[in-house]
Image (cartoon, rainbow, N blue to C red; front, side, top):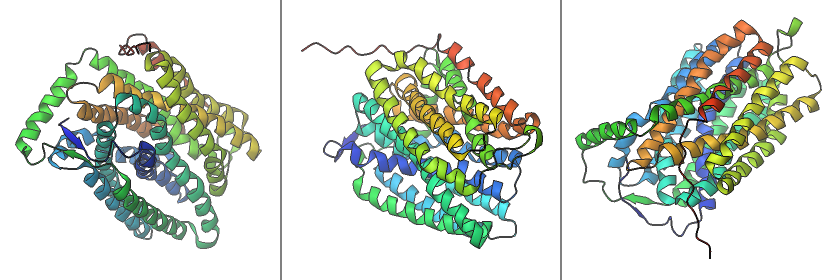
Length: 433
């Protein structure tokens, strides 16, 4: 739902001062719930199918967030919502430090993670709305690389530095105490970032706040959904979004678990890396490769246009599938060899992921309700991710790692066929000087 806004500082404050911190927080909350928690549970002895199933269900918060996104228009400032939900997330992370110490730690942790997930999903609505309201279309494309880079850079802080630290702490404190320390540190980090964003974010004011009621917002929500569903080619767009992430959701769920899974006979196990080694790989060259790939993908797409760049972006999204298949088939023992492969995977993933952000932003969202349609598109994207994530553990346990990664390669091919049928907006011609 889009209403007139009054930019008070957006026109004078450089996006580079707030886009990285804003999307770092968005990513950090997401990856704590969807990835870091899974690795923690793996070290606590929870099997892959339960890890994938429950962390997948937690992701529903991001899928259904469009149902309450229009009601955020009742608030005068998206910045206020962003900062408030960031502090809520920090409180939830502190509660996780207590939950892992309880006898029923798995159930308690899942309950707290649900709280974090819904606060984070609400944060994302306001976060994306602030981004769209503060930047024009050219800036949106140019900074999409920074957006994607820092969203996913948080993955490598959590799966990099903090995971290395967790591995070290586990040796002296034990698994459960080590993870309590990690969640305390995450809570302090998020609280500090929330305080920074309270000062750095542009305050785009909603001129219609106070003039609308909840009933009118509900009516508008129905109008928003109806308007989206009447867009030409909308069902093809939705299918394209779901299939874009279908293979990715499976690889990004099982890939890190494969790295940490103990080696077994006849290819039944993983690479047998320690928590510290996995964190070291993701937190060093993996981080750098992803950041370079993501920023390069944003500028590459801005230069070439989304339609012309999309085939290359889709090819880049196949790189993680191929890389993990190679690792599962060759089962290298050399840490440098494994790290080099993960570095290639991360570059491809970072480069290609930009395509999904811009597809929703420039193909599905434009129109009368661009902010709400972007949220709906993001929800559809998340549904595709959740579905693939939820089933990935069962498929992997039935097939084994090598055949599973072969399967994910096949899952990445249908989106290439859909590309021939999706309609992209024509690039705006720039007049010669």
